[in-house]
Each structure stands twice: as structure tokens, then as C-alpha cells.
Length: 184
Image (cartoon, rainbow, N blue to C red):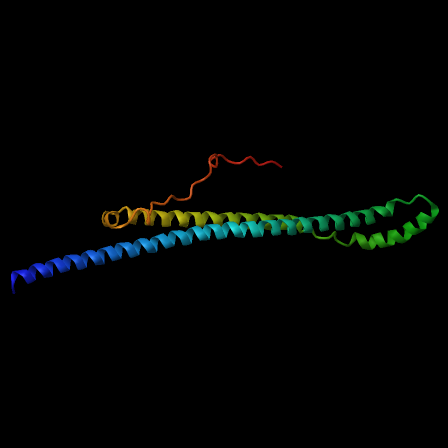
């Protein structure tokens, strides 16, 4: 084989391997960049879930608590009316009420569910915040993979820094490291 053919094959092989290397680095960078965008979309989705869910849950719990308050108030007022006799006619009515009261004594008050509703609401809030935190963590993990790839030796040579810029992970707002003050 002539030396020129050997040189041409060597040059062709170098070009082919360089192209394949570039293609691999570029394709991997695109894939990682899309993964970062997907993870950020998941964070946004979790935020939207919270924005949709929390007001609905809160109104449901508040409505149930208000309903229970009204029912308990009426039951308490009805039972308290037994001892409010002021006239002889009231005593007769009271006699009938006492009979009824004897029956009522065996009845239980309506079951209070608003406390359970508030506890369920707290669980939903905690679960929602945990989902958001998990999505943020996954976003930051994808940023790490992406940034590690684009800063590698061959990626640093082959990739355009404007098309594949270094990305910043999720970071907390200033002051978020301080525990919030809870007031009742």
C-alpha cells in the first residue's frame, strides 16, 4: 500500500473519530440540557399544584369547621333551653322537654371532624411541600450532571458556550435559612 493512502486513511480516521466524538458530546449535552429543562418544568408543576390545591383544601376545611360550629351551637342551645322555664306554661313545656331530655341524655353530641380535617390539611401541605422539595432536588441533580458534562475536556473544546451555558441550580431566597416565626 502506498504511503499516501496510509496518510489519507489516518487523516480520514482522525476526522471520523473527531466527528463521532463531537456528535456524542453534542448529543449528550442536548440530552442533559433537555433533562434540566424538564426538571425545572416539574418544579413549576409542583408549584402550580400547590397554588391550585392549597386554597381549595383551606376553603373546604374552613367550610366544614363553620358547619360543625353551627351544628354544635344549635345542639347546645336546644339542650340548654330545657332549664330556661320562667312561667307555669314553660314548666309544662319543660316537662315534655325533660322527657325528651332523658332521651337526649343517651344521645351523643355530633362527632367533631374539623380537627381531623385540619390534620388532613396539614398532611396535604406537608406532602405538597415535600413534593416541591423533591422536584427541586432532582432539578439540582440534573444541573450537576449537565454542568459536569459541558465542563469536561472534550465538551469544553467542542461545545459553544452560548448554546450550552453553565446553569445555576435552585437556591433559596435570602433569609430562608432562618426558621419562620409561627404565630397562633
